[in-house]
Length: 619
Image 1 (spheres, rainbow, N blue to C red):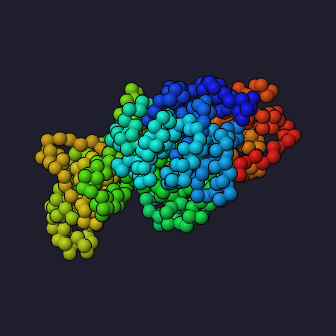
Image 2: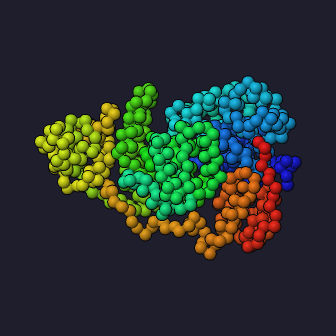
Image 3: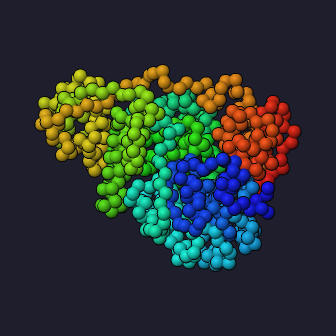
């Protein structure tokens, strides 16, 4: 069956015949049928939850062309490439196209030859494009990354504010807004600004059970990162987030010196270099991208096996969205982070120095405090993270560091009182390093010149070493007993919360920062061992090598041919005919025609007899 000539009208048939899946994921089917019937929708679904199918399938079922608003050019091209591979009539309009390519797409649109058209918001709303859309039949509008409309969010795009024009200009065309990250405040703002207040809301579970969450205190962050990569992810694709451009550049260069295939990405690089690095990351199977938060939104790469943070994210919303870029294919992935007191100092200073209104600053401080509380948890991280977004997980997840290696705790009441007293006695105007020296009774020139060697707190803390005191100060900050002063030097000051502790009216138990050991930690010798049995390793690598050759021949990323999850299903099912291959999830009719026999040959240990001609669209 060719979609070009025999349109399918049942969503379930499109799901199976085009995309190769037997059934919808939770909530997907409800969204699809609601949109097919002409309803508006606001969809919250986690990264990797299948948001794209929620509008792609209705676009193929309804009459006309669906217009998809997407904020990033790279995302458009990825999705268009994948749709063309699946036999779907798709194209995009953006600034990367030549004038001839733009005219070709416009002619396809006017001729009714497109099921989906991806457009950047700033181009969509030009008079020329709006006039063009008025000449064709539109099946729906899909607004992807809809949180960009919210000024409370972290990816605000001012051009998104104008998208309400779509409803005013095309009132009969159904609209769907989609995002992976939005708290209640952001949801309301999306609905209001896009005039979707009466739209039906579909809120999926925020849980990503395939992701393992791990947080550790900083202790030479680069070496910690390298040990993590060598132990858990040799040869894997992943993202490493840093707070500053300088740290990005230095970390990427250092990783390359250690033999890791790493690149840098931040707004300080030229546009052409950013584009090149992003394309290399998307196409490679072993690339580590070291980046600021400028990188990641809209990256459609399903085989990112880890996301690492070398600095503290600004909020749990940012953390959730960034870690959600790992394991989009549903296979095991890691969200790994190290953080320290200096991260808090830097983020508080950036916030205090910003031009934001006082009300915005208060909200951002609350979000930072929630992020700190998450870092110092002693109970299940997933339960806490989901609870922040209003979702309850009845039992501990068993797939975070707190569940796998429960942290030891200790009665820190007396030590905390000493630390708080030291902050007070020194005038609440010094950072952690000096406070630790006072508690340990270090005979240095600064203590003597300030007279701090005469204080009652001088030398009263020798029961802990410097590392132990740094850990305690970090946790007192996270729990709200201390705050970072706005003096620009990282000075610590007391909060009202510390009064009951200082008066002896409460006790305090904190986590011990100890190296984690234990039998449950995974040991990996090669990339595929977590997915396939040792006996299948050779066939697994052969499948991946075949996919890589096909991708290179067509100028597309390997995952556009087949996801890792689909290759795994081939390996598990061992189809011996095209009919059996058709039932492998993720194959679909168009890919079966193009690649079915090729991958059957590889599975049966034969050299593929034929390879398809390059088929990538010029747009």
